[in-house]
Image (cartoon, rainbow, N blue to C red; front, side):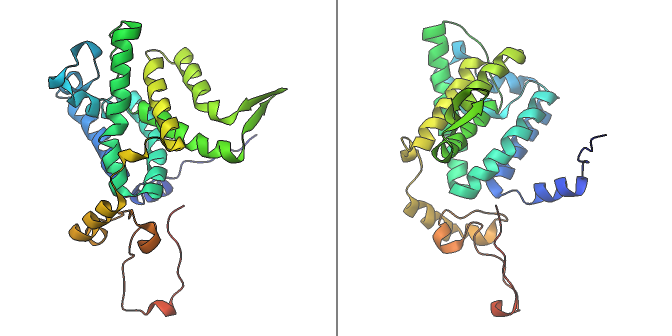
Length: 257
């Protein structure tokens, strides 16, 4: 009989404790908001993206809708999918960049585009919420990196462009999973392609400003698991804790993937 990998709580606990700072904040926000919606269901109605209600007084929905979920299963499946993707993103770009993008443009841009398409193209009012918009955004960004080294993959006699993988997954998900927004996922994937292609890198604050904030607030020393934006100087995970043992007498090991 085939052997299946057994669930190891110790490994899961170790993985959770190693998550970088911004990833932890976003995970806690997703879980915390789901818990809050149990006694206060109006929170879900307050933050979900409902195109017909959008005006200047409802802009908070563009920031909140990726953090809110319909039910526990919706939340847990999205969380399992998006957590390693955000962790990888933060490890590459730093904590400040991750917080700036995921609390801002990575929600407002696909949300705003979805609203416009729903109102003026589809002429519908489909309500959406959930971190799946981030899942397909980050998948699209990751697959563009893979496409550079492996442009195609084979399915029988056919060669499929690697960059189309998220689009195929979006279509399959829309067919198999009920109440899934095809347009919403496409908006997220589109932003991911633009990010990976370098067209919207201007959304990130200048590196000099980010380094100044890090130094001024001493974020490397104050925040556990903080990822420095200046990886050339501080390394991927900032300055490691020091001890009384001289560095030359102990072997070093690089942290992170």
